[in-house]
Length: 199
Length: 199
Image (cartoon, rainbow over all chains, first blue to last red; front, side, top):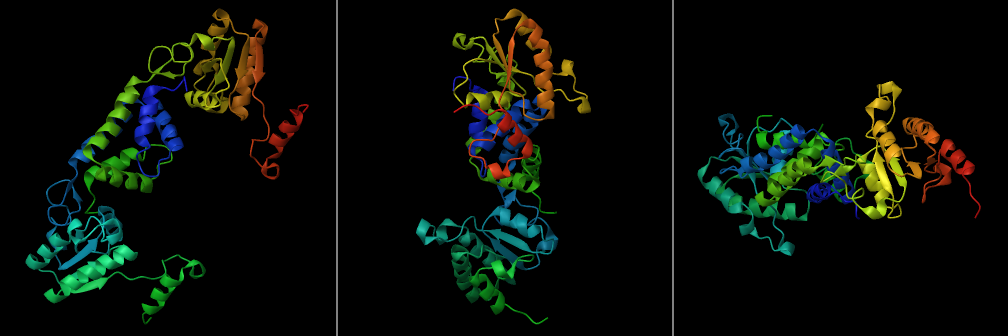
């Protein structure tokens, strides 16, 4: 088009890299940014760049952290012997939102996936084993996703930890709260039945 | 939460200012940005800030422009006597996407809205009148939105231009292409009937 405005096109192209931001949404956002006060755009731009630069990985658990150690690992009250193993930093955020877990985390940064050529050495399993050998860990809660890769990863880690006399648990599968039995797939329903508890 | 990662929260808060980006989406985007290579975040951040700084208003039509005059106004081939009046720069982009309009534009940057206290002096009507007095304009196409404010603005401008012997036209109202008669509201259907043409 002859009338494309180059700065807007550049902004839209960059915004389009973000997940869930399609070409049309990116264009709409770019036009919005064009209409924003300079100061607000500066603040957005700085937050992204300075924010990204400030993000490190916690040297203990692998979670995102503003410093060398994340706020969970730095909190003595959370060293209660529990370590929750998750795939991504965003899974840590999800579990933190329950406000009911008071232990530590270990972020694998991936799950085992032979199909994609991701083996044990490609994710942070070695680091977990090192922690299991040096920290006092009473329970490892395997909270990888309830999919094929997540299950395989959980089983693999459990097999490694069992000989070390560390209790391994897996988060429960079942019907999501607020969900509808009619629309729940059979595998989930089966797991919900298997995992039934006395009330 | 004790485990909030401050740079991610700051990014999420800034992204949440964008239209259509809710709290959850902003959080998801912030986590994605945290996982992006530094170079890509820098490129996004620079595109937003430099892009916003590079955007000016065309001194002739009021459209967004990288220079003093937008690419449409700078193109002699488009000075064909037609001026299309729209509310926003993004409406210019929408009409350009048809690839069938070859005239100029005039961006009002708003529509008359007594309810919100927006009068003729608050939008770029004076600038349009100045152009009507100095440029050779044969037709003004009023392409404001088909809502109450858009209609009122179109009528108001038409009343001002008629005495200057400039032809004023209004974009057609009717059933959108690909739309469904059954789900078309009555006012639109009425307009579609009124605007019927020989085939």
